Image 1 (tube, rainbow, N blue to C red):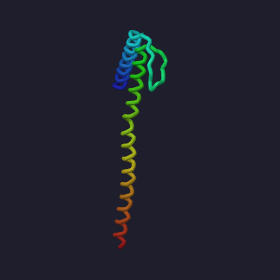
Image 2 (spheres, one colour):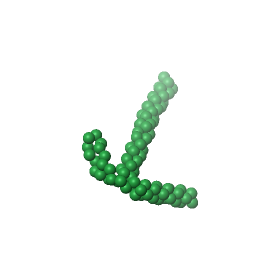
Image 3 (tube, helix red, strand yellow):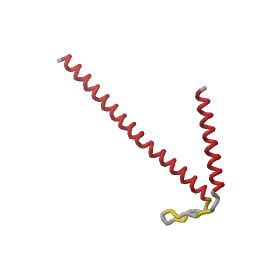
Image 4 (cartoon, helix red, strand yellow):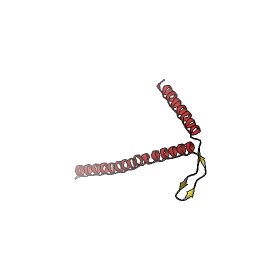
Length: 100
């Protein structure tokens, strides 16, 4: 039940965002041409340029936010291997002390 409500809320948020984006783009219909590092970009509506930059920035921000997560997983895996190695060494020392 809660999963269904969560999906419905996400769908409504998505639809509202799309409607706002389309409205914003249609209200800012002036044609502009941008220069990026000396390269002339195609002439598009101002609202469309802003929406494209917003989407690109959001995507890059999402990608960059995953980097610490990936580094944390690698660090945790390395620590797990070290713990396993140390546990084996402890077990070897215990069996050696019992025999000797």
